Length: 68
Image 1: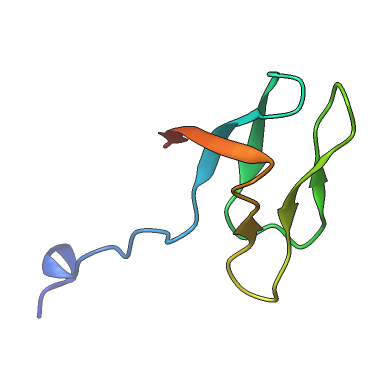
Image 2: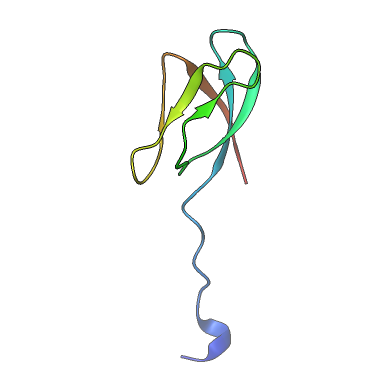
């Protein structure tokens, strides 16, 4: 194959805009986070790392939009 015909792979990771269900604040979290992401206002843990794709805690956070 010619060099210009080789497809460029797209990243599988994303950023998400989530709303904290405790205080209602918007936060931006990474889908493959390696550290527990906390709400900037109340400190509630929104994302739990699992070694691969992070687990967004549904009872504490709601995904509003996918960025990028």
